[in-house]
Image (cartoon, rainbow, N blue to C red; front, side, top):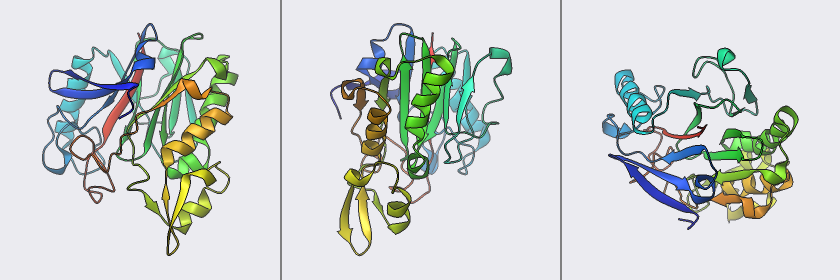
Length: 264
């Protein structure tokens, strides 16, 4: 794990934080692990998805536990579809019901609302502009990465919120690493325009190992973030199924952890 991240606990809930985001006044965030919740079996135990086969009442208990442990008055999560839509939440009264809007990134300057994403190998990116007081959360699987969702989120912060990309801080949380992410020609070809050449290593027979976090880091840099303001956890979810849900590491039969950021 990168030393710019640390593990913390609130009761039985274990989570990862970025030291750089932690230093931003009035910004709360967490990359949750799989531990500290009510779910059982392959979803043990802090699962936040009702679409993987877990019992809805147990997911509801996990959600309630999260809001209590972190004192979150309101949670907002998108219906993630592996696309490139960036949802902008402008007014509290117009925020849609959680998981009703299809998108894979969300930004807001509304204080008090925690915006979050669910992952189990995809790249979670939490982003903050401490100058303009605006935040974002990005869900970057390979398809969204191929559509340059990280760069598009930075551009949306610039056009919709007046952010200077040089002021932004980004934390890239636990995701599948190149050690475990072998992909085929479909993924390799699909990433042709995503600034990804540096992140593929051939393993022969038409397969490659892909560093998905590195591609998103490069896109953030191209969008204007200074390298020193982008921090990567460097924790592979597939290698650490003792801590994280992993779709590939657990052959698809698993839950989803939650990653959130909030303006206090």
